[in-house]
Amino acid sequence: MSKMYFDLFENYYFFTMDIFMSQYYTKLMDRKKIVTPAEVEEQRRQREEQAAKEARSKELAKARYEKRKAEKREFTARKKVGLLTPEELEAEEQRLAHNRKWQKEWREKRKASELEKPPKQKSIKELMAIEKTGADLTPEETERLAAYRRKKADQQRARQEGKKSDQPKKKVS
Image 1: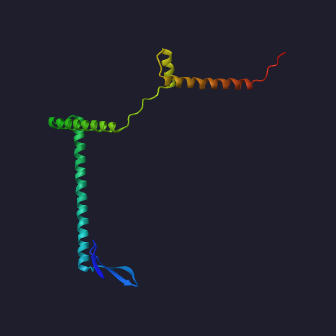
Image 2: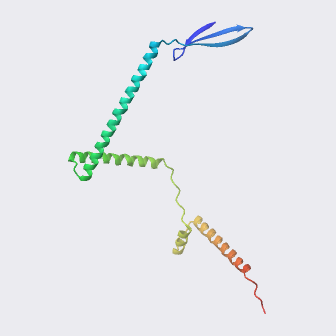
Image 3: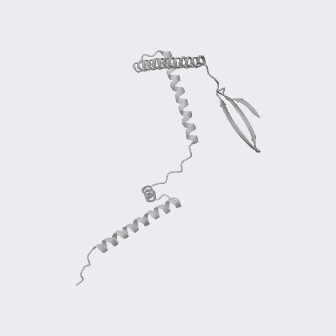
């Protein structure tokens, strides 16, 4: 039993199924499409034409880009000197207003997508200054300040003990 199929590149395939001792074997036989020299020449000519079209298109695009760039440079120079016509000034103001509006929308959208940051903790110095003024501190701030003072007192005690152990013993007479 054989069937013939075509793939996307117009190659012919035959699938044959042979029955031999109750086992099935599938064989794939590739029959390539025969390409004539005239077809090869036609394909080569088409590739060359396509390459020429792409090169010409690139050159035109580059020329348009350079022309636009020169026009912008000339416009900017006239704008700096103040030689723009009222119509050009109006168009420039509209363009700038549109850009500002778009940038504001973009910033708002980006800000809306960001997570809200938790409020920043007050520094120990700020907490001490608030306590000196007599203002009330939250329980968390009071606990932080007390922990800081305990830590500093422990450091001071350790320094004092270190100084005492370093000093030679005084003779008592």
